[in-house]
Image (tube, rainbow, N blue to C red; front, top):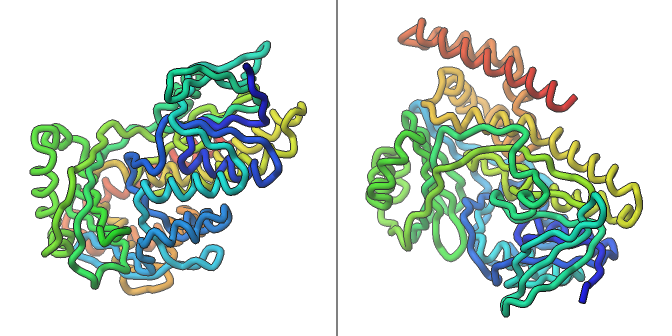
Length: 437
C-alpha cells in the first residue's frame, strides 16, 4: 500500500526535526524517517551560541533541552599570542549565554518536540529509494526494522540526513557546487570536570598552529575539542588517545584548565572535513542541514544553521504544498540560506586553514583585551548578530595592520602575512558577489 502525506523528511535530528515542527504546526501531515532509535548519539561538537539557543526557543524545544542539565555559559574566553580576552554575549531572543548539550539528549528533545507538534516520527526506518512522477520526486520508499518495505508519497521530500546524505545522492546533488577542504582535523573527548570555576565559560586556546577548546556540558562533563593542522592526522592515526593527551599538554592554558579532570570514554575523530554548499532544491525535493550546507566546526555554526534553515524551510513551503508555487518557495528559501551563510562560510574557512594566528589576529585580540565593546563584537560574530565584515571594517583592518607593523620583529614577514590577508579578503569579496548575484 502507498501512503499519502504532505511532506516526508529523511533524518530526524536537528535539521529534520526543526523542519517537521514548522510544517506540523502549520497543519501539514509530516512523516519523519530515521534509521536510528532515539536517544542516539552522533559525531558532533555541539556548542550552541545564543543564536542557536534562540532557535530552540522559537521551536519550543528550549525548556526540554535546558532540563538536560548543561550549564549556561555566559562567559566567552579566548587566548592566543600571549593575550587573553574574556567577555559576555549580546542577547538573542532574550538569551545571553551559550550552552553545550550532548547530542543524545538534544536530538531526543527535538524528536519529542516534533511529535508533540503532530509530526509522525518513525525510528529504525531507512530510506532506500525515491518515488518519481514524471520529472519530479514524489515520495520515498523505506525499510522498517523488520525489513519490510513501505512507500510514502509526498509533495516534497526533504533530505535532512547529514553530510553523507542518501537523498542528496539519489537526486544527483552529492557533488558540491562550491567547497573548501579544511586545514584542520578534529578530535574530541569528554572529561569529568573538576574545575568548577570554569563551568560558566566557553573557552578556546591558540598555541602556534594548535587549537583547543573546553566547553562544559551536561552530566558534569566538559567537551574538549582539539583541531590540529591536518598534517598531524597521521600522527593521531598511530595513537589517537596518546596523541590527543600529548597535544593537550602542548597547549598550556588548556592543560591547566583540565588539572584534576579525567578523560572518560574514547576519543572521537574526523579528518576528512570539507565545507560546502550543495544544490539544495529541485522538483519535489530539498536538502537541509549538513545534507545541503556544511561548515567546519571551528566556528560552531552547524547546529544553529540546521535548526534555523530547517524551521525556515518548513515555514516557507507549508502554504504552497500541492501548488505550482512550491518550487518558487524552495528557490527563495535556498537563496536566503546562501545569502545569510556565505560570508560566515568564508570566515570559517579562513579560521580552518590550520595556520598560527596572523599578526592581524594577534592585534585584534590585543585590542579586544583592552576594549570590552570590541570583545563583545567578536562574540556577536559567532552569534550571527554581527557580520565578519562589520567586525573587520577597512578602517579597523588598517589600524590593526599599522599596530602589527609597529609590534613585528620581522617586518618583511609581517608584510607578507598582511598582503596575504588582504588578498584573501578581496578574493572572498569577489567570490561572494559572483556567487550571490
